[in-house]
Amino acid sequence: MITVSPHPTHLFTLTASTNGPTVFLDIFAIKELAKGDPERRRRFIAMLDRGVEVMFSVANAAELSGPQGSSFDKMREFLDEIGPRWFPMEFDPYICLERERDKKDPTTCCFSDRLLKVFTATHIRRSPNIKIEDLPEALPADFFRLGLFMEWLAPQRQNIIEGKAQMGERLKDQILAHRAKYERDASWLEAKFPMLPFRTDCPATFVYINLVRRLILESKSRVLTSNDGIDFGQAVVASAYATVATLDKHWKRRVEILPKPSRLARIYYGQELDQMVRDLERNLDNAALRRGRAVSSN
Image (tube, rainbow, N blue to C red; front, side, top):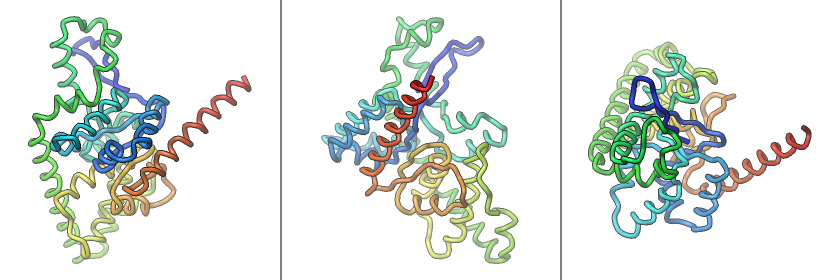
């Protein structure tokens, strides 16, 4: 949930909070949930009313604003059904790593408020009936509707595409350079990217270091593509901070072989969306049952 409150020196302050499971939907999952089995889509949306929150990556906005026709209409309708039950996540893992180094609250390290602040300020200024001193009650219930945010974001599509390409080139260059050092001296890998144990105060650092290590080891047999930069970033942030995440099969495999024990997201790939919905429903039912027992015991 996104909350806007008055601030003593700025126009307002933005915060994100969750009371239940958080789900990261990669672009393939958004498309499949929107255009696939209608009953699965209905069940997923119903879970949002029970406390599930969607972690949304702005990096996906370029593809979501590209299609036209009936395909686009279905995805737009799905985003509108998500409504305000989402929050934007950072897709650049370096930002999260810096926040973890600065000992920021782990629950806020992945919250990306930059574009959301501009969106919020723009719409508040365009709404004469909204007064800053009356926040958050003054905002309409659908103020942060995801479909509306996507409409506002659409003109920045090209900038997002270029940013994703730059992330891909940066990752490819880094891994190639690291691989060259590793081939010259095998001990370099242990010195620079040792296998880290999991820590609850820096989950993104755990995933980042261990995933880079994995990519270095795999780079002899697999060449990174232009899409790998954003896929890497989303794999780091989503697996570190979500309860459940959807990633493609290659990134699911890489996350699942990271050192154990850990408290990372459970990962699902394209053919497992039905299982993801079933598992989330079961978790919500179990949580409700535990709450009922706690109330009865009191």
